[in-house]
Structures are given as C-alpha cells and as structure tokens.
Image 1 (cartoon, helix red, strand yellow):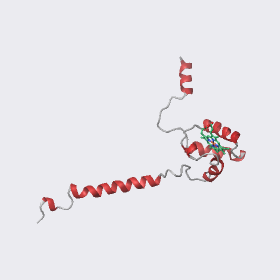
Image 2 (cartoon, protein in one colour):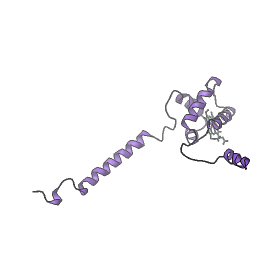
Image 3 (spheres, rainbow, N blue to C red):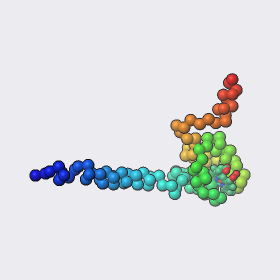
Length: 122
Ligand code: HEC
C-alpha cells in the first residue's frame, strides 16, 4: 500500500526534476546566444569581420544601436581612420550593420532630433 510519503510524484521528488529542466533550458538559451560571436552570421559577416576587427574587437560594433544614418557616419569615420570598405560594398555594409545593430526595438528614446522637433512646434 502507498502511504502519502511513498508516493513517487510529490512536490519534493519533483523539485530536482524541475530544477534540472530549468538549468538545462537556461544553458540552451545561453548557447543559442554565445557572447563570443558578436557578429551575427550571414553573407556579410566575414567581410565585416575582415574590414572591421583589425583595430578593435567586434564588440565595439555589436554594443552600438545606431540608425542607418548614424552607421553611415560611422562607416565614413572608420574609412577615414583606415578601414577598407570598398565603394561597391558600402551599402551592403550599411544594410548588415543597420539590420543587426540598429536602434533598440520597443524602446522609446528621446533623441536630440525629437527634442528639437518638439521645441520647433511650440
Ligand atoms: C584602422 C583601424 C580601424 C578599423 C579598420 C575600423 N575601426 Fe572602428 N574604430 C577605430 C578607432 C581608433 C576607434 C575609436 C575612435 C574614437 O575613439 O573616436 C573606433 C571606434 C569604433 C566604434 C565606436 C564608436 C566610435 O566612433 O568611437 C564603432 C561602432 C566602430 N569603430 C565601428 C567600425 C566598423 C563598422 C568598422 C568596419 C567598417 C571599423 N570600425 C573598422 C579604428 C578602426
């Protein structure tokens, strides 16, 4: 006969099972997003890697959330500093950077432009 404490699936026996499931899923998530590869894969990834990680780590790029316009300015700045971005690749670089390191989605941020636009409206 099974007494209450003998029953195998009570909360106490389930806890380690649930815990290890949680740990496993957390590990899986961490692996899906490894911090060591800040440049998301794609046809442009090797080109960006070659042109943009000679002087600094890719983190320098990945930590940014620039608009297309800002990335365009940034590309110009890096080209001036010595980055080799072929003219024919300029737009492709811009597409990759904006698509992967664009402005944060779902975050409302006041830019200086917004502030200027608001003060103009008054
Ligand atoms: C010739 C060396 C060199 C190359 C190549 C280079 N960078 Fe930079 N990068 C720098 C330096 C130097 C800084 C720091 C500039 C500063 O502090 O004003 C920097 C800083 C940055 C920053 C931080 C923002 C800033 O302006 O300080 C970003 C983003 C960036 N680089 C992106 C890129 C991208 C994208 C590429 C490839 C197209 C690239 N870099 C290639 C030298 C380089």
